[in-house]
Structures are given as C-alpha cells and as structure tokens.
Image (cartoon, rainbow, N blue to C red; front, top):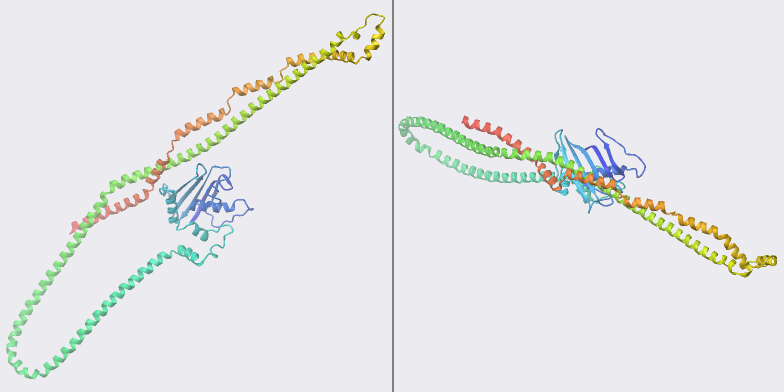
Length: 503
C-alpha cells in the first residue's frame, strides 16, 4: 500500500479542512512540539481504514464541532483506492464509510450493504486488520514494543497473518494427499510384482517339463520322420492359412482403427456439441447481463449524484443549525435588552415618584411650620411703642425662627416640585423600549432559515435511495466480469461450430 493523499476535516486538533499530499514521497519525517498533531495524522489513516478512535467514537471530532471526515487515497499495485469515513455527533451518533477504486476510468464503488460489510471488504483488500496494521506498518505512541512484548502465541498469529501461513498449510495438505496417492500406487505395484513372481515360478515348472520332453524326443523322432511327409503338406497348408490369417488381421486392424477413429470422432462431436450448448446458454444471458450492466452503470452515476446531494444536504443542515443558534442568541439578547429597559423605566419612575412624594411631604411640613407666623401673637407687633421689645422677643423665640426659615425655604421647594412634575426622566428609555417591543428579533436569521429550507427541498436527498443506488452500483464489477465471460464464450462458439462443421 502506497499513500497518495490524506484529507482531514474537523479531525482531532485539525479544525476545518486540511490536505496532505503524499504522492511521490518515499521518505518523510514528521517533527514538531508535543501536541502539534503529528500522531493525529497516523490516527487519521487508522481511522479511515479501520475506524480506530481515541476517547470513544466521538473522541476524534474536533471540540465544538458536530462531525468530522477523513479521506485517504492510496495505491495498491496498479489500482488506486479512496476510502472516506465520517463520524457525526447528531442523535445517538452515526458513522458513514465508503470505498472506491479507480484505474484512470470512472471510479467503481465497492461499498457493502452496511458499514461492517464495507469494513470487511477493506480488510480483505489490504489483507490487514487494525491490529496487524499497528504491528507491521506503524506503532502507536508509547506502544512501540507491543509486538516484541506480546506472548509467543500472539506473535505467532501475527506472523502467520503476515506470511499467509494458512495458504502454506493448504499446500502441505495437498502434498500429503499426493504422498498418500503415491503410497497407494506403490502398494498396487507391489501386488503386481508378487503376481509376476508367481508367474516366474510357473515358468520354472514349464522348463522342467521341457527337459522331460527332450528326454523322450528320441522316441518320437521316428514318429517325426514319418510325419515329416505329412508335415510338408501341412506346412504348405499352414503357410496358406497364415497368409490368409495375416491378411485377415490386417483387415481387422484397419477396421479396428476405423472404429476407434469413429468412436473418438463421435466422442469429440458429443463433447463439442455439449460445449456448444453450454456456450449458447452462456451467450443467451448476454441481453440480461447488458441490461444489468446498464442499470449498474446508471446506478453508479446516480450514486455519485446522490453523494453530492448528501454532502450538500449535510452542509445545509450544519449551516441551518448555526443560523438557528444565532437566531436563538439574537432573540435572547433582544429579550434581555427589553427586560433591562423595563427595569430601568420602572426604577426611574419609582425614584421620581419617591422624590415628588418626599418634596410634597417636606412642603406640607414647612407650610404647617410657616403658619405659626400667622397664628402666634408674638409673631407681629401690636403698636409702634412695643416694636423694639417685639423684635427682641421674636429673635429669641425658636418657634418663630423655625417658622421664618420654613417660609424662606418653601419657594425653592415648590419650584423644585413643579420642575419634577414637568420632568419625565424615563421618557427616552420608554421610547426605546416601545421601539424594541415593536421589533422582531432574528429576522435575518429567520429569512436565512427559510432560504435553507427551500434549498433543502430542492436537494431532496433520500438516504434509502442512496443506499439502494450504491448497492446496485456495487454489482458493476461483477457484471463486467460476467459480460467478458460471455464475449469469450461467443468467440469460442465460432471455433467450436467451425470444428463441428469440419467433422
């Protein structure tokens, strides 16, 4: 596996979208202070391929964000793959996983029916699990010696997965089966050898019989001489019979060869006819496969369109949430301002009323005190003769002095009372309060929410429809392979039909 590109969005400390281009990089070093996000890049690769997270399923989402996404592009042999994994906090939390293959053509979606099935396809593609990845391709921070410190059985299992020892075990079993077959054949050869040895023993008995026949040969010599005349005649007849037999054997051999050739030809014709019928059945499925391939290609294109809709739908939902939060903040701020102005108006009215009431009470008291000058006899002189003594008494009388001070202070207090009664210090705040009460908070946000709702209707993303489109698109590679098999069958049909016609 050769990394090509890593794209992160709101993953751990990487807020927003970041792209790391690794194409052409053969050796690299990540350096920086602690907490700068070096380990997060490795975690991003593990998260995209195997769903590895730190601090729970939602622990990889940047603090304060609602979702994160990691896209990892890598090469495997001549093929290029793109794995995309997304995690959202909404509701009980959800995970989206997708994998695509590209060979310079339109990407092929390899998603399963569920996240778990898609995960298994990725692991089968890489021949790796997260545990095997962390002990072969990378090491967790603070866990570099995990493999060397593991128990022997665990290390053996890891090495077995790396070397694919299961395949070697299958080959060993095949070798053992071959050995058992050879042992059976050897045992059969032993039985045949014993039969040959028994035949050799029988041949020794025949040799003894021949020796006995040789001993009696003299006795039959005379008989042989007598029979030689007959033998000559018989020999001629024998030679004629042999000639006839050889001619018959030649004819029989020729007939046997013709029969064998005819039988082989018939077997070949039967096999060719059976093969031709099988090929016809295969080719018969071509229209159905073509229709299925067209549907799968259309489903792949539709799945890509739905993926774009899904991303737009998610973006609108996220923006709507942010606008709704701003609207709630604006409404709360408006209510706070209204309440503050109400309290200020009430406070100013209360303070004004208290001051007016205090002045009225003070004026009433001073008015009552000043009335003493009219009611006390010593406050006014009787005649001119007593005036000097009157002023002397008045200056010493505290009641009269208090009444005079009250009469002196009354005009200023009455003027202040008239001024207060004409003033309304709360008027400006009350005007501002009425203006705020006539305003509707969050108008701009509400308008934007309506626009987002309309855009959301226009997008019209359907999750079930998207899943079905991906499921149908997932059959594209299988149908392409089946169609190539049909095309090969068509070529073979021409060859088989030509062979049959030649026969």
